[in-house]
Image 1 (cartoon, rainbow, N blue to C red):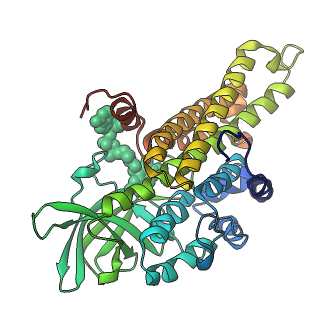
Image 2 (image 1 turned 180 degrees about the vertical axis):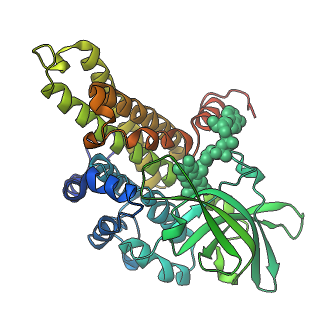
Amino acid sequence: MNAMNFTEPEERVALRAAVAELGKKYGHEYYSKQARAGLKTEELWAEAGRLGYLGVNLPEEYGGGGAGIADLAAVLEELAAAGCPLLLMVVSPAICGTVISRFGTDEQKKRWLPGIADGSRRMVFAITEPDAGSNSHKITTTAKRDGGDWVLSGRKVYISGVDEADAVLVVGRTEDSKTGKLKPALFIVPTDAPGFEYKQIDMDIVSPEKQFGLFLDDVHLPADALVGEEDAAIAQLFAGLNPERIMGASFSLGIARYALAKGVAYANERKVWGAPIGTHQGLAHPLAEIKIELELAKLMTQKAASLYDSGDDFGAGESANMAKYAAAEVAIRAVDQAVQTHGGNGLASEYGLGTLVTAVRLGRIAPVSREMVLNFVGQHSLGLPRSY
Ligand SMILES: Cc1cc2nc3c(=O)[nH]c(=O)nc-3n(C[C@H](O)[C@H](O)[C@H](O)COP(=O)(O)OP(=O)(O)OC[C@H]3O[C@@H](n4cnc5c(N)ncnc54)[C@H](O)[C@@H]3O)c2cc1C
């Protein structure tokens, strides 16, 4: 988006239209049928990869589209608006693809980026630990030197898509040789590495992507498993976390659009006392409010993406947090109101809304919880004392 020009460039408008067509071809019925049968959305993922949509943000020389996170966010939003919110887009091309493109060695880029870009390879992301939770300063997954190699041990929880990934980008810690203090570092861990185990966590979300607990027990890794500098990992981590929040916002925005469209269509069709139920302001006003909140959240998401793509990591941080917050809240409201507008039909499988009631709650919890965003805004945007 150009500065103070609230329209997207022509290429992105065209990208949105093309992706929306692809999303329509599959739709929410396909998505939820696959999820309910314990299957993935392989066909959609592969086609999106072949068409260049999954790697639109990655460098052209490694098979990507050479565009920015704003474009990848548009892809995810359009697919979600068609009823196919592909959660792994948040981790594989957005976090892992970004971190490797920006900080990986040439060898790492050659090995991983073309596959991530065309969707044939997937890398997922693991920071959350059972004991540290939202306090990622307290993570204890630790990498020790073994000659030139690394040995990684620890536990992670709620890691998405491990069963369909070739590798996991694990946030661990290494010991500073001078101070003995532990500092964050990022490692690429193949999912078939000896000592790496994962166990599915049963979730009440209707989604093709599953969640896992990870157990890393003295996993031996070569020297080049480390991504970027051992001493600059915090900056590198933040480079990946802003795209994660922007994509989290787009995931929610797309679902909000999907739910709102369904609510509006039904409010126009359904007649109970002779007139369409949308005639009643008790239904029309909440839908109108959601439209306003959705447009506001979308503007903030586009601002965050635009700042990130212009290289302003710091400026993008505040907007990305606010966008993630606003998009998650409007998505929860949109799904709830769409269900309410449908009356009993809102919870019938045929109407494709009940599947999203728990899915949409994810946006309030991950990748960073609503409360942690409010902590960030209180402290950094308002200058209030740190509360934790
Ligand atoms: C479906 C799903 C997919 C996920 N995918 C991934 C993934 O791929 N990779 C990954 O690394 N993680 C993933 N996560 C984990 C997610 O990022 C965490 O669940 C989230 O960051 C919250 O951490 P927690 O669950 O440990 O909650 P906790 O940190 O235990 O927090 C519990 C509650 O306390 C609140 N709270 C905690 N500290 C404070 C404070 N200081 N002030 C105010 N309130 C506070 C929180 O906001 C929350 O409401 C996923 C989670 C889910 C549910």
